[in-house]
Amino acid sequence: MSIPRPTHFTVLDATTNERTEVTREEYEMSMAASIDILQKLSEESIKQGDRFSRTCSFCYAKNPLVRSAAVECGHIICSKCAADATECHICEKSSAFVRIFEDDSRECMICASVPRHRDFLVPCGHILCRVCEKKLSFEAFDHWQFVRCPQCRADVSSGIHRRDLVEIIEPTSKKSQKETRSRQDIEKVTQILNRKGQHSNNQRRTGCEKLFARQDKGMSRVNQPMKQQMRCSR
Ligand SMILES: [Zn+2]
Ligand SMILES: [Zn+2]
Ligand SMILES: [Zn+2]
Ligand SMILES: [Zn+2]
Image 1 (cartoon, helix red, strand yellow):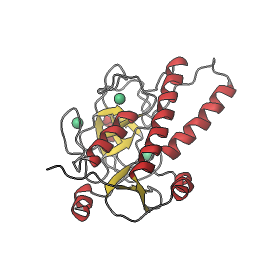
Image 2 (tube, rainbow, N blue to C red):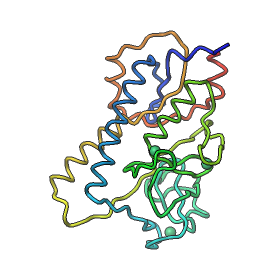
Image 3 (cartoon, helix red, strand yellow):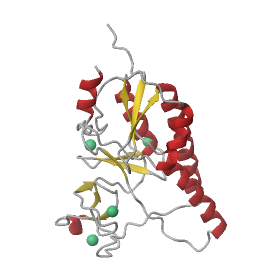
Image 4 (cartoon, helix red, strand yellow):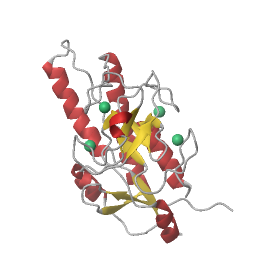
């Protein structure tokens, strides 16, 4: 017997902690739009030959062997500096740090693309491209399953489990200001569209207008434990 798919998804606004119910169709539409933008940004990044800085913004070590990311904000420092840090010195949020597993290449472990935007998983620290992260989470929610890391199978469902890595592009003199500005605009849109949801079979309808009116709030993560959500929804 197959379990019915969720009819609604809950989107959590990271800034206000407000939850919005959206229909499956609305959720899929907004996910497709956001994937489209992410892919364009990656193409552009490859075309421009972006190089991503590895310099620790705390001790200025140029190329630290191991780096860690702050769970709360995604800022990255070298693991030595992260060892006894209790807050991110860049944005001053109290945060735990997770060692991130980086390769020489930025290739995504799932789709092998070279993404502009990557996410890391908590607690394991494995990295994947943001497009795959979105698909992975959706697949799990859609089958009432826990989100698991594709590399180590760690359960990354509870609490803050998927985080946007904040990566700094090294400045190059070649880029015109115009290019940089248009890119900043696109990046702003992707931040807005970068929403993460959860399943829900609450039948309450939420209008499409409402969904899109809320996008300017910069929904960016879900930190409601999924187990609880699943219990409520069944
Ligand atoms: Zn450092
Ligand atoms: Zn920070
Ligand atoms: Zn990928
Ligand atoms: Zn993992």
